[in-house]
Image 1 (cartoon, one colour):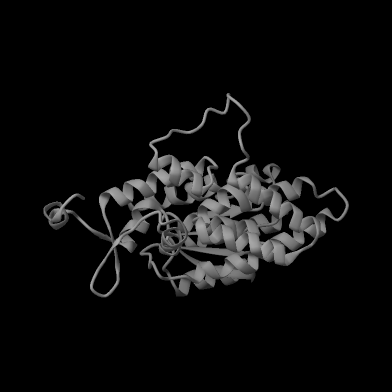
Image 2 (cartoon, rainbow, N blue to C red):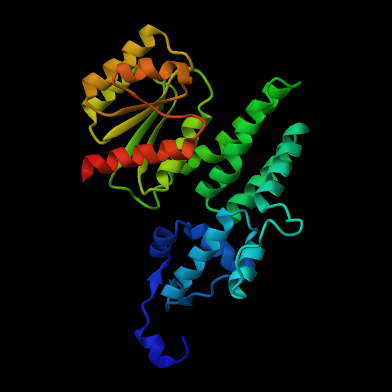
Length: 305
């Protein structure tokens, strides 16, 4: 804006609208402002931030670069200078910020250093949306650890990492600062780690859907009774056994039949997917959790269209 005339006619948006439009939550936007001076929003008389269309465009450009692994400080400079992404075919490219963070997580898990894990986690979540951090760091690193599970102390490192992440991420599902009209019920029907279920739930939230999270073991009968008494969820996501036996499959089939709801299941091995589909369930791919979250969203949108 170049003068009072343009300022008086410019459209201004509160931070909640900008967060919804860009996918960057208000906490992250404020952190970017403090540390990098990325955006300098105007303020109301009461101090509330107001953003312009140009601000929103800039934030979207930054997000595009972050998705490509460009550190935020470098992304800010590139946008300011009108630069494009560097050509990876010329010269030696620097490691992306995601690679740097992944190495930090690997070192922390190698040494069983929870303080180092916490330091990296806190820094990542301060400057990146949690959904982005899940897609580009926390989930890929969890898969990396699982691939190394046959190594010495591999299972112990997986347990350390998943327990740490669960304790830091589960509370985010109870954040109702952005109320959602549509909610998804998620429940663990096993005694196994439910970290992948938590990942899917958090990824689903990025689409403006609310989450009702039943942690720990929940039986099929309990879920059926819950739905009969409280019909507020159009779909549910259940964590099931890796290789569910015929009795388990029949229990989950009963949930789908008696509730009349789409029932997504996660955690099952690929070999079990045909049996689950025959039972009227919708298996989700554990090796592509972002796509799993998209599948849940698409089904819901199809039901409400």
